[in-house]
Image 1: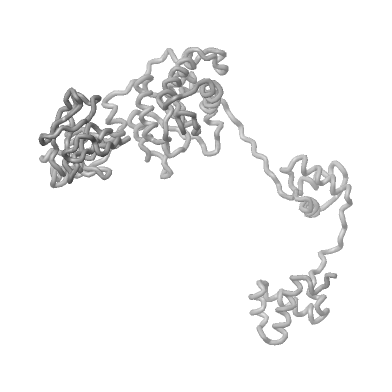
Image 2: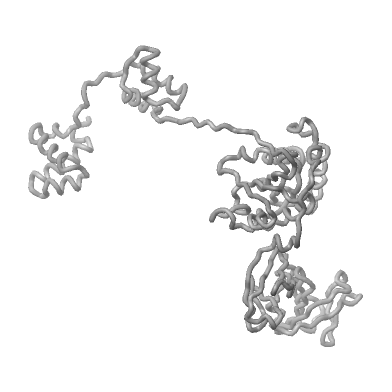
Length: 442
């Protein structure tokens, strides 16, 4: 049977009271170690001296007036009907509707006993449908969540739609949700349909940096083209309702209808589906008319100037004494007259262009290891009709598919490396006809 000594809080108080009484610590030390005030500790000692251990029990808080069971049930029913109601609100409802007078803390205690004491606030947000009044006033862009397709693997769909007409102006399945893929599809879309006034996107890192507005390549390209960027509010999917509904339709109408054998196959079939969607789909939001029916009667603003310069990343490099520059762990040759001068480097995808005083000095493929080619003597050979090249009185088999192409040859130790282009590198052992290693960069 539980006694007063079994109460944990009584044992704690008694320990410090006895230590202080026997002179092992002062009242201040005891209060500090017990985590109470000096006044509380003094009260414990006084109550123990007056009533013994019973004086250390908690004092009852006033006269207890238990709430009848039927009233408790009424309180709980009022709360569960609307969990945003506070104890004060329930008290007022009881007084006005039932004539029952209770303190709001009594109501709270009843709710706490059944786990309904927390107030769940309801928030109401007014949503406004919007639609731009003309084509190319606003484009929406977004990635559809990744899906795994048999025969293809994990893919993502990037889509640009016109807000006024719901026309799909640009779309492509890609293997990565990168900023580069966004820019490549935007370039193609602008060449086909002109430049929009604004583009609406979410706050993904492909579109907006965590450092704030204006730091991503996407934003810089849009600024050069005179496109305003609008970013959706966080946790507000309703702002992208048009494109989200389109993703649902693609998942219901396109993906289940086809089987795909390759990555190119899915994009080829999707291009045909997009053509049907824009020209023939009876869109419910357009009174049954297809999107192309509204994408008309306007003059698109077409891009001016070199699109590569607009979309490329711009960096500056100083030409070193050996007439090269370094960029992304690779080196590129530059005209020696620019040694110790700064040049402008433009990069988009795998293409690198170097400009000095607005003059194009060279164009390179970033997938080619120019450092290795420049550090060694480069020999050039033409692939003959039999797919062979001749080097140092020995023939090497390159491949019939490369007949008529020039091959750059570099000797590295006992290897002969044949660079056909940025995606094909064959490595031979010197004076052995067949390739020792065939490396294909992707």
